[in-house]
Amino acid sequence: MKVTIKGYFSIDAEEAHIDVRMFEQNAIAILFPYLGAIVSTYTANANVAPVILPAMNVYMRKNIRMGKAGIKAFGKG
Image (cartoon, rainbow, N blue to C red; front, side, top):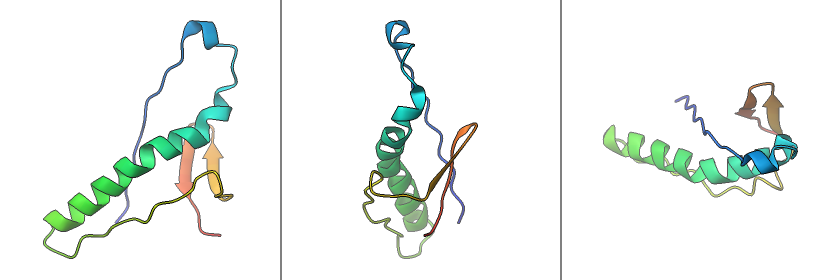
């Protein structure tokens, strides 16, 4: 199974001087529970044992690859 999840975030114009890259890990932390819900619901509805993704501390994860368009993939390390 390959799953892609996108999140759209915004900041106030007053905060536009802030470097957005500093929020990338927080975006992963926000989206990861939704990704887990999608995967477990999809597998449960497919009439197989549901796949439950374990909780992940994204701040301790060193191998999250970032690209021009944002988060590209979770790698193994």
